[in-house]
Length: 442
Image (cartoon, one colour):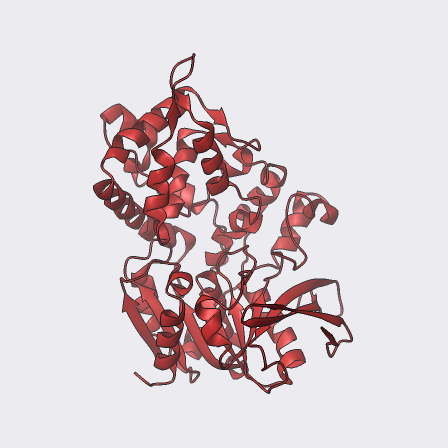
């Protein structure tokens, strides 16, 4: 199947069980304040139910979590997508720099020049630019009609910026685990995050008490014998702690336990970390598929003009219980860390190592513009519904609820039934609940 976009680009369409998919490509300005300047390509995949390809359906654009993560790749009509295509034409957007949207990584960024040129380029890859991309694309698909936005995690941050800058473009907004604090600094965000991560770690140890000894043994072993993971990542005790990133997702505590339970094998040189453990750690810790997550993570929160300066690392010093060396010396459980990005990661991970100076320049960058307009949000008239996960490890529920109270007409669903990735695991239930809330049907 094939067709032509308004831009004249030949479309590619194909089928999966329960879906007809069409690939779209758009040329958008790198800098939307200079629409006649350099352009980049944005890729998006349209999903529609079979038999509805020719129907006039409202559009729903999905904004993925991250930053730096391409949109989900559907495998047939599953979870929320199966429900959404009953009444929408769904657009799964690869945000700029991710997936097939002019990827930005260690292989492509040197084409921009040196670290300073790379950092200046990546300064155009925050939520504000992503929303401007959406507004470039929307009239080309909808003919100017407003569309519905579904934002997961960082995609919800983008959706709140959308409400701040172009509410007339929005029919409805659905947010899952992604209501940001409107005025919190990166320091504020991590100061709230470390206690949540500690609770998640202690809950994990309560479920799997045998992991206390195992984690301590691994950290002690790595203190004396740092290892290189398959692919070249250097694993230290601090790197091992970063495996706690999994604890914020559905089933993460179980996956972490199963990884730890076969950590050691006997060898002629004594107990050593197993190949199976090292490969599992490599998969969990590598940023090869989403380097922008590491490079731009703290920039997501920067909007008061000051530099973030590795906020997660600085704030960690306020929580000495996360020091693995201290825990081992005192015989205390080694705590895992969460989604925090630390400067040593740029040296440890081969996918980030060539971009180390770029990352340092972004951490030192000042003058980031504000992302949210509190007055405009207070006057909002767009139907908005948001799922707030009660003990979300990634996005502070207290911050989210404070924001919810400031956005006009926003309705919340606060639940402890799901973790941060509830839109994926909860599927149609989460989508239906939010849609009903937005439509005032519940």
